Amino acid sequence: MRAAIVHRFGSASNITYTKNANIPEIGENQLLIRVKASAVNPVDTYIRSGNYANLPKVPYIPGREGAGIVERVASDVKKFLPGDRVWFTTPVTGSCADFAVVKASAAFSLPEKISFAQGSTLGIAYLTAYRALFIKAKAQPGQTCFIHGASGGVGLAAVQLGKAHGLKVYGTAGSKEGLEIAKKAGVDEVFNHNEANYVDTILEKYPGGFDVILEMLANVNLNYDLALIAKFGHICIIGNRDKIEIDPRRIMQKESSVVGVFLAHTEPHEYEHMANSINSMLENGTLIPIIDIELPLSNLPDAHNMVIEKSASKGKIVINLELFDKETTVEAENPDRDTPPSE
Image (cartoon, one colour):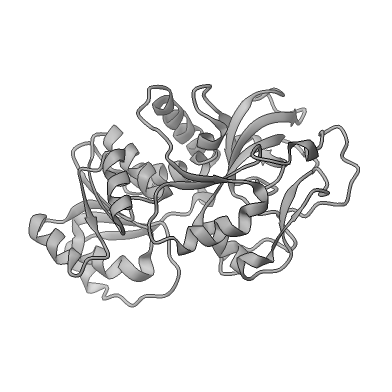
């Protein structure tokens, strides 16, 4: 099968492309999924660079979410059948390959109206945004939510989820394009975080602060969040790239809380609840996954660089495994190849 492989941690240039990886075998409570699309996330770049708490053994196949068609099911799996369309999160083997092994509890039915490319964006962004808003922050209708980075994958998901649940949603973006896409997603008001003194401007308009803040880059913005949070509010840290010094008294004075959001800690029953809610909103058109660009698998190094270097987030970057090289697709019935790398 085709696969992207990371042989050593470091820059995106360490990602290689092969057409001869072995198709992985499934175990108990697992599915083999023929991957049609795999979204690229900042966490993929942290892992590939070696700057992450839980690193896989190298070599490994990258990719933490995707969508495709069930190829095989373990004998103890009753939830799915071969041929089912699914979206999935945190696969056992990486999603940047023709086939991936996924726990049955981490795969969910993909509505027919949603494309594989759109479905591939659900497993990290939408589940993370849902977990932050409604499980960690316990956001309620009528509350205010501020999204520091509303034009990226998780940010756009949070805008749509927040509006769907009756929140007043505010946020930031870093460019004209980012501001526009956040507005299209439904944000009530969006500010440019590259403008000088933008935090002062926000506080002048909303001196009471916000009930919930979702933070995508805590090492840059956490001190701003402490100024913007309302009394008894919740700051949810979703992304971070370095250390930051804060004054804990600012948290004490507002009796606010700062919590981390780590999708890997999600319990199976929580996954099921979140996925069912997300699928319902996909079906009724409340949620519309926003894609910036689709690239072929061999362009994964470019996709990794784009995730980090792009100054204007405009939605998700997706690896579409159907864009080219269809003639190299390997049938799952012929697995006798080199031992594949896996996470």
